[in-house]
Length: 405
Ligand SMILES: Cc1cc2nc3c(=O)[nH]c(=O)nc-3n(C[C@H](O)[C@H](O)[C@H](O)COP(=O)(O)OP(=O)(O)OC[C@H]3O[C@@H](n4cnc5c(N)ncnc54)[C@H](O)[C@@H]3O)c2cc1C
Image 1 (cartoon, protein in one colour):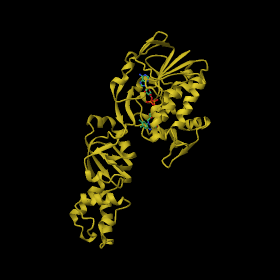
Image 2 (cartoon, protein in one colour; image 1 turned 120 degrees about the vertical axis):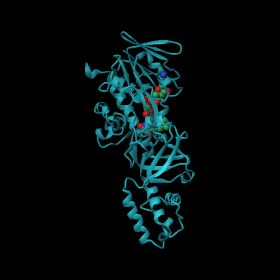
Image 3 (cartoon, protein in one colour; image 1 turned 90 degrees about the vertical axis):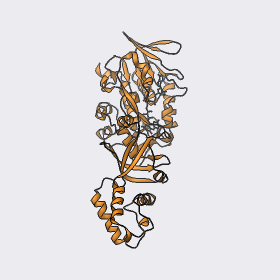
Image 4 (cartoon, protein in one colour; image 1 turned 60 degrees about the vertical axis):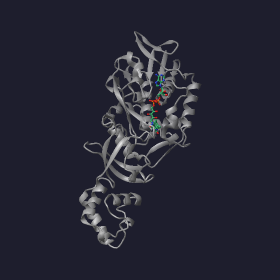
């Protein structure tokens, strides 16, 4: 039995290792177009590789895939985040779980995972071909023909694990297989903004911000980081993921509304500020931030509301008060672009999930053809969800539908 795996990334290697376990005698080849394998794993999690998330349950896990995540239940019930933790632990990878429940190798180094994958595939005799792009795949009556730069090779099964890219040409090598490709767009990116005063606060982290895209229902709440180009952090990345298609249509020019202390009623904030102004009449406004807003952000909000941070609370006018409440609860910020200073983490879009059986990851168009990882129209938030998708879909694909036989 000959099996081709197209793409030497997370899903490709995991599929190869599981295939060898399930089908010892199979001849397995990984085709990788780059000169190195596992390049995304290398840079994942800032080089530390957040390889899964310690979610409370499979249902909770599924909530972190914004586009039809519930479909992944079929996959996660066969290989969950808990199974992934056990798998890596059984293979000698100790792990640590941070306060956000993100899981990393205890070494804090993605090379640990890369070394493990390379060792296991080499030991079990998987053929590893780097600098070998697959140019096209043809479905034959009883197998598949892979077109390479200088040869053609025949296989009984093909697992496609090429990842994703926001470029239609990236998927063109699949065109002979007649699968629908949902337009791929970047997800998980930060925002470039115009406001130089806000950008000057770079390094400030705000704990619980409700970020909304004006004139839409898209919103996300959590930590926001101010950077030298604009806004980043978990809440911004989540928002970029939720609104990935909409923002692409808007060419990444839109208006954000920030509620800097989370989802609270404006009247309540008004009452709180009035209370502070009465209790702290003789104190400088700039020295008495609302709730636990960082002082630098508080001063920015004061200046934006035409309030001198050195003025005393007793001097606050009604007009200034209204403006301050509005800026705390609904600070409007123009976004100019998707940030180019960070790499985009994943793509939304890819091979349509309607044409893949999620019990087996087999194509509904061609028997013997499987998909796993980011090539599918599946993407998750930050937190280890994208690599978990790669492990789980690869694990299921590597059964080669034996559950059906
Ligand atoms: C900077 C960065 C940080 C990230 N951090 C995390 C993280 O901490 N946690 C997390 O869960 N996710 C993270 N992700 C996302 C995660 O890395 C990906 O979702 C995951 O690697 C996808 O795995 P994959 O195997 O499907 O695709 P990939 O890892 O992209 O592998 C696909 C491989 O296929 C090759 N290929 C493509 N076309 C062909 C072809 N025609 N022929 C042969 N080979 C081909 C590519 O060169 C590539 O090596 C991060 C992504 C980035 C970019």
